[in-house]
Length: 336
Image (cartoon, rainbow, N blue to C red; front, side, top):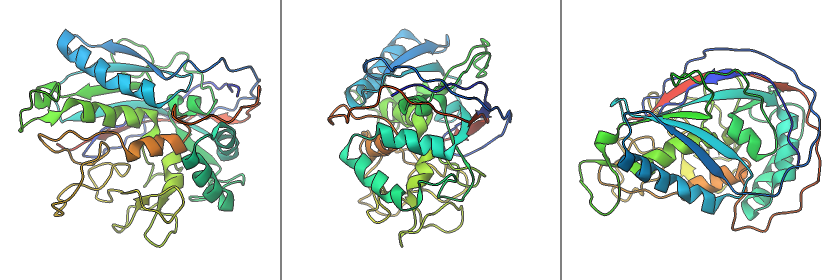
């Protein structure tokens, strides 16, 4: 598959647990895309930059948590991350968000599909998702971060963008981890602290595309797979009836619908269920816990990341993608 090209952004800041969203910029841009061949898969990789508040031991623990993604996904995408430790909250991720014509994204998603989960998800989208407008609320745009678009072959030009890390450079995500509250490994565990790996991966998943735009105008890819218990699409902050499902009927996780934590996180805050299984994308963290990636892998799979455990369907050598509009930077914070 080939890369498409575009030019400038919207700011989207993703923070975790209180869910705070700010629109910092809105720069619509249109681009006609030329086609070029995509190199052979090199696997998902990360380029990391650390503030001086993150020491060498902490950097090594972060690198270990990132390494798992390379074993899970084979996309020829490099994700640039800037890590800092301000001592605030639990974990925060900040990303730029871009808007693309829904039909452009849908066509790229179809060409990129390779797993059994992709087949199920695309079959459901085929019911109402092939038109010019998105099937969630009927606008012509879908939003996503640069890395998530790159996973399906849509290239966003980030030249000149400043993510706000303090060095004037662009990063796919700026992640703030309150490392004093975290266990750096799962060998020596303080039951009053949080698991670094699960907090880290929660934030990285947001940079890769797990953020929901519920309450905003244009949906994001995960909102294509957000349904109520009756199988109807859900794109509202009202009620407490929203689930991640790839076919509209099989509920894989319940979404948080309470203001404060992110709407793209899974329900967990004040959960009275003693049998609740902690998920990496839970809205509220659990001290002493150690959640592992599970349903989050399926979520990333169906929005365009290619699983290494699946046999990929041969992709066409070229694809021209047209009409990319760019939009903004938002912010979310996760509750401890």
